[in-house]
Length: 389
Image 1 (cartoon, helix red, strand yellow):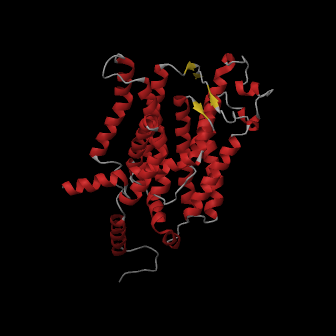
Image 2 (cartoon, rainbow, N blue to C red):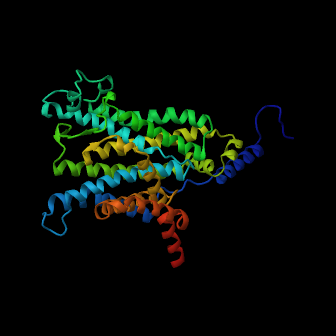
Image 3 (cartoon, rainbow, N blue to C red):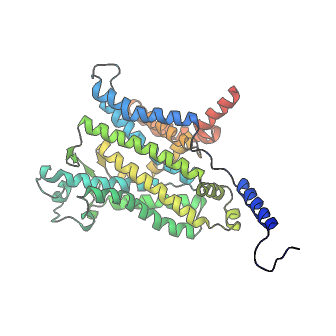
């Protein structure tokens, strides 16, 4: 007879327990690989192109050669890679969580302004007025730096603030918005109103942020001239590495349990709540992550284009970020990056060749993608590939 009163499990109970544990482990979904072999091959090719081929073609190949990569091409591709980071951030919040933001241009601009403040301090006494204050402050008769410029002369503090400022603004806004269960078109409108209000604020000279003109005429970064080909290429490589790093991070995040909950929130938020999950924490977390990514993109953008002003916060810029994600293909990660390159390249060409038609083209492109390519360019490619097989 088996005794049960002594508190010790018998051998049969132990075997049953082991079998149950093995069964429960087998029932758990396996963690999918970060990327396929083809994906890793493409990633390595992109890494080599950014870190080796582009510097070689720009700095080593003579300017007269057909293989030379011009400084204009370096600046253009660097700028588009910054846009691609924003499009990737939009995909996390819109494609995988189902939250359409029309205010991500604000976070992009905030990161750019933090970097711009540091670059303005790096000018020192080389400005037109030979003053320790930025030229625009001397022109407006400022006697000392405002309080929010206190840490702008420190590169380490600037790096921290590039993450902290957009992240904090996103956290405060998202905390109240998500707790109030604002969603859908109402959330989109509020985010657009937020970035428009910030743009109007930054236009004012009293903010000490350059007003309508913003910041420009940058000369140095970390004590080195910012306008040299070597520095431009260094920032280009850093931008490419940041984009590739964020892409890997996004793939890991989406493949994790956290990412699966985000997709469940997108598809059926009420069922997620019924299952015992609180969507507020998940939405707030991915919202802040997405904002920080845009802030980093803005910080990399400013030294490459040489200017930052309130126009970067215009509602049209935030809408354009959503268009990049839609054109490339939402919920694909690689799609928004492709969309940013397609739209960014087309914009660069059309604004020179047909400047009066650019906005019409952008609007028609968005309508065409919405009606005929709901899954974007990547969706069309997958459909074509499936038809071939």
